[in-house]
Length: 247
Ligand SMILES: [Zn+2]
Image (cartoon, rainbow, N blue to C red):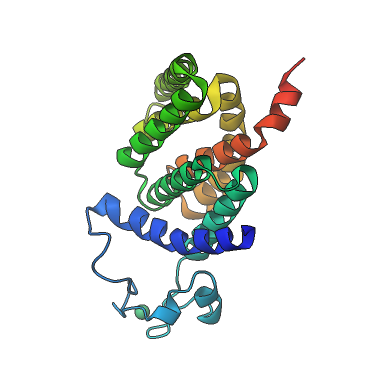
């Protein structure tokens, strides 16, 4: 069954990638069909098999030889793993469906931020409402309100970091999208674990930042994908992390 969910996750992964690539540009998600960005070659069904196609095509468009983005297999594998882990943790349940949806929404943001430095509002709103709804349904109104407050606290914290950062660096230090994303992190993890996620995400961002700033002379890096990775890691390991945090 875990294997089945990994496969389903990989198939959905291709879809999340298309949404993340097209939604920020205001393009339709359904048409045109998946094609090579370079020569417009419409991909056949056997060129659309997650991961396998990428391996068989040796990471190139078979018509024009243009290199395909490593984002394709990366997102497909990440999606497969997230679906598989969600099944392992929750079994057949509503939580499983919720976590599959949330994983997808986060992967969409992951792609759009990495590619265009845009963190879409819609997936964040839907994911936050889903989590708050679940907290209310399973743990009561009080817990839901606490989650909401946690979101606002983490949001405010990041906003202050941005204000200070902007002053010190004399330019935009954190994007507005990163701060909105922090609200969701607070909602799903609570205040304490959110800070763990922020640290984990930042630690992962550092090597990438050094690489991209020195190699491409870039002036900004997408922070969202690292925050999302940190959040998912902390979310699934929270029981172990709580043990360390408790006296
Ligand atoms: Zn091509």
